[in-house]
Image (cartoon, rainbow, N blue to C red; front, side, top):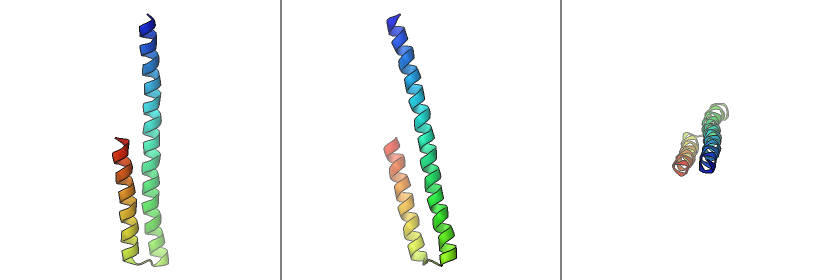
Amino acid sequence: MLRHYYTVRQSKISHRDDAASEAENELFLMAFQFEYSYVQSVSQHEKLSSELVDELHKKISMDQTVYMQNGN
C-alpha cells in the first residue's frame, strides 16, 4: 500500500513537471517568434541592410535550434 502511495504521488509530481515544461516550451517558442517578427518590423521601418537582417535571423534560428536540442 505504501509503495502504491509513493508511485501515485510520484506520477502526480511528474505530470505537473511535464505541464510546466510544456508551458515553458511554448513561452520560449513565442519569444523566438516575437524576436523574428520584431526584426522584420524594425527592418521595414528603419531600412536595415539585408545582410544585418539575415544575420539576426540566423542568430535567432540558431538560438531556437540550440534550445530545442537541449530540451530533448
